[in-house]
Image (cartoon, rainbow, N blue to C red; front, top):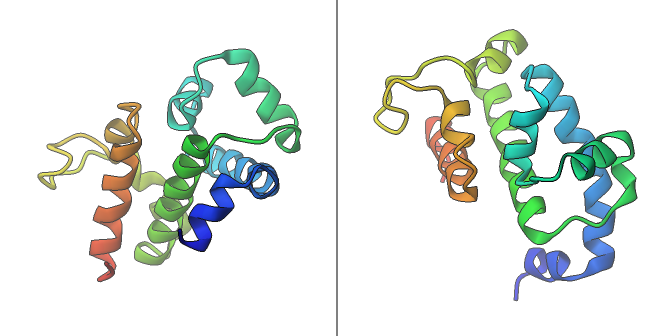
Length: 135
């Protein structure tokens, strides 16, 4: 088991990562001008009261592995965009712009990410890492 997997299996580690991850996510959501519904979908949460509880007090909870994985991909997407598009406004706007890459088929990366599946977050992250010359 890798250190990352061990950390995600430990409730104490997940608790420590949860607050920081949620605070960072909500900052990114503001920059990307996401709606509450879009945020809920990206986080994989269906209960509005849970979402608003997290938003009001990010340190209140210990997130599930799935949610932490989602946060990890979103933070990676944000970081990759900052590297690829050093102008902050261009990086933040890219997420909503139509994209002709076969992966997006004329839709935006956000459209792909809003399918609700963790794998779509992974795919967008992988695409951006490839654009950076990573992987």
